[in-house]
Image (tube, rainbow, N blue to C red; front, side, top):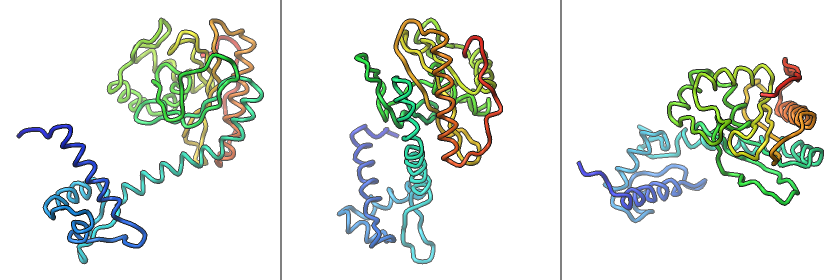
Length: 270
């Protein structure tokens, strides 16, 4: 069978999106005939799209009325968006205070499809600016944010992410084998924070800590990022303490009530 061309696939995707947009508060349920009429498409074409969307649970078909309505998958996706918005609202005042205290770049991120997704950022007032932007992504295995987010996943999930995404080497300090990464993540869990010491970009130094929801699940990470070849150990430990305190405050506002079991330790940060 001949595979559809990219242009055909895009047209099919556009039609599917148009079909979903046909459902409104005034018309939450529609029949095949009504959808075909509204969209100006042939019934056969609409039926094929409906079958695909129903199989993926984007639509549900009532077996009695034979009418279609929006399905559970859209509710699940919408809930994810709502979770991110709630996270940003809870975190923003604390991020602003951290930004004022540190004078450094502050990030809030989640793990999405095995990579770091930035959901908020406050830029350092310094002339050198970072490439990161809200909505952009970064690798998880070599960033402080990513290592924190990976550290609280089951080992098998980390294995699956690495199998899918690999462990690309960006600098001489990048962890590039799975066993070393798993050992490193265990240490991150023990200490309650992670450090990126030029593992993704040579001049970037970063400290990150986990943000938990009311169940105790790690749902995000907050970080402080600075630019420089070297970072004084005293300054680094101060940044680690600030970012851990901020993550604790955000977690509290999300309903988490237990204090972290770890204590900030001396020695070489992970």
